[in-house]
Image 1: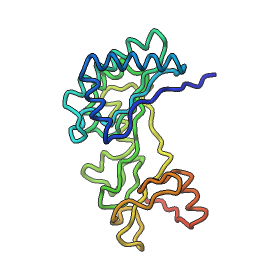
Image 2: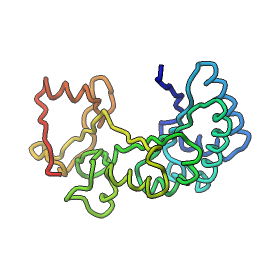
Image 3: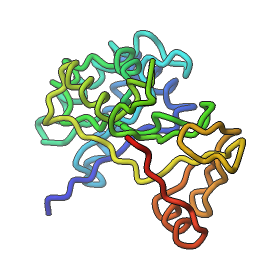
Length: 231
């Protein structure tokens, strides 16, 4: 009886950033979206909505510098409509301090949303030169320069530093792994050089991504070796 089910809007970073940017920057578009969201929530008896925008202010994804201001305004408008019905308003937000700075007025955000789902994963992907853990908990001895920011603890502390109350911060736990194709198959430590993403999983069919149960299957049936680094 206490389960809350939210309507999630967003994802697919290749297209969503431009569409969200166009939406929030136009008052008529915001109005139409709110009307549509209210109708869906009422019709299907959802408990609220989660907005998943990758990422406000991301110029390289066709976002705009003004996204930060307009997204805050959009959330204010949604919040005013939702509060009389006790509907939940949440956002799924990045862990990167640079994405936070570009896209979120955190103090204002804290006043309008019920909580923030922080995406504390995908810190390291196959676009880099080496194989690395995509969701390290803390800074590690080998981390330097910008990698000092790429861990769960830093992301949480940064959101709190910017003004998000701890009661409104939810840490995302990834139930998936990232895989890589090594340049040298005999060198499989963290930090080994890679050629690109690993082979796709049988079920997920996405190169470089494996679900938790696919990883378990590889350990049990294909002899995948489980290793832990010094950190």
